[in-house]
Image (cartoon, rainbow, N blue to C red; front, side, top):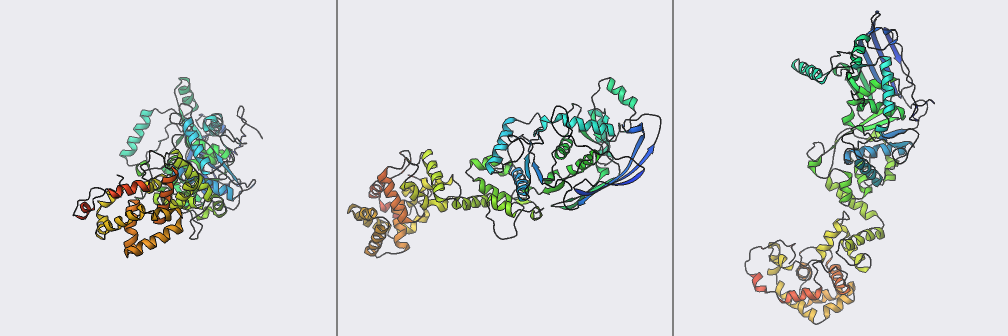
Length: 594
C-alpha cells in the first residue's frame, strides 16, 4: 500500500466521481447504503475558474441529495474498529468516560479494536499534563486500548498534532478536485456577511464570494501573499439522511450550511476535516460519540463523499444531565473521573454506574462487572433520552461493589487507611478486623471508614445528655441506671464479662437488666448512652467489646479523642444528674465530642 512520505501512514485512494449533468451514483464501498444525486449545470467557457476541475469548466452547484441507511455488514474487512478521541484541554468528564466505556464495550463485545486518538489541534489549550491525566483515568477505569498513545499501532500517529502532513495532503486533493476552493475574505468581510444575514433573518452562512473566482483572480491574491482559508463547496440544495444506530433516521437540509472552512489561514486544519480524515485513514467502522456531535455529521459526510472514503456507522449517545435536567457541569459538583477517584470511589463501581446511564440489559439487574458488561452490551439497547447523574445512587452502587470484594482485600485497604490517617497505630490485627465487621454497613466509600471509626471511638456524652432527644431517656431513670452500672464496674462484674467476650457480655446484660427489672429499650437505651455516649449506633455489645479491647491494646492513636472504659466511668462519676433533670436548654447536638 502506498504511504504518505515522511509519515509512514497509508494513503486511502479516494475515488474521483466524474461529473455528469444528471447522475445517480451508488457508492458500494460505503458501510451504509449511500446514494449521491448530482444535478450540475456545466457551462464550458474559455475563462479559467477557481474550481480546479479538469478542463477548467465553469461549475454551478444545483442539488445534492445524500441518503445513508444500514445495509448489513461492511464489505471487505468487517472487523469492528471504534475510537475515543478526547481533547487534552482539561480533565476526563464523566460524560466522556461514559462515551469511552460504550466504545470499549462495543468493541470487546464484537471482538474488535478500541483505539484512543488525542485530538490536540487546539494548540493554545491542549497540554501534556491534561493528556496524561485523561489516559491515567481511562486506565484506572480498566478501559485498556488496543491502539493509541503508549501502545502504538499500524494506523498512527495517534495525536492529531502529529498528522498535519496527512491533512494537507487531502486538503490539496480536494483543491485539485474542485470540492474545495481558496477564500481570501477578511474577518471584517465575514462579519459583515453575518450582519446582513441577521438583518434578513437568514442563517449566518458564507455567501460564496470566492466560490467562482477565476484562476487569474486567485493568482493575483496569492502573489500578494494574502492569507486564505480553504472552503468546502457545499451544494445549495439537497438533503443528507443518516440512519443513526441509536436515534434512527436523522436528516439535514444542505441550504442551512453554506461553504465551510476545512483549513484555516494559518495552515491548521479544522476539527471536522481532521476527524473525517482520521476516522477514514484509521479504518474506523463505527463512530460512537455524544449527541452534541450530531450536527458535525453533515459536514463530515460531505467530506467523506468528496474524498471517496468509506463512511462509518454513526451512533450518537445522549447527554448526561444533572438532577435539574440541565447539562451536567461543574456547578453541580464533582464531574470528572479524577475527582471521584480522589473521593474514594472504586473504578468498578464507576464503570457499572456509567454503563447504566442510558443502557440496560432489559432485566431488573443493575450490578455488573466490566466482564459482564462486555457480555451483555448491545448498541441497540442504548437509550436516546438523556440520563440523570445521581450521586446518591453512585455512592450506593459503590457500596455494593465494595462489599462484593474479598473481605480480606477490603480490610487491608481500610486498615492501611486508618493507620495512614492517624486513627489507629496498626493497619492489621484483631482491632482492625472487628472494627471493619462492625462498621462495614456504613461504609459505601473507602473514605467513609475514617468518619465511622472516629464516630465509634468518640464519647460525646455531654452533648447527648443536653440534646432534646435524650430528655425522655433521662426522665426514664437514667441516673439510677448509671449508679447501678458504676457499681457493676467497680465490683468487677462488667470487666469480667467483657473478658469472656460476646457470651460473657450477653450473660451479664441479662442479669443486669433483671436486677433493675428492665428489658428491651428501657434497658439498652440507657446503657448505650452511658457506655458509648450516643443514642444510636451499631450493635451495642460488639461496640462495647471493641472499645474495651481498643483501650487495653493501645491501638488507637494518641491524637484521637478516645476515652477508654476506665476514663468513661471516671467521667460518669462526676456528672451532676440533677442538672439534667431540670428543664435545660439544648446546648449542642447529640453528635458532638466533649
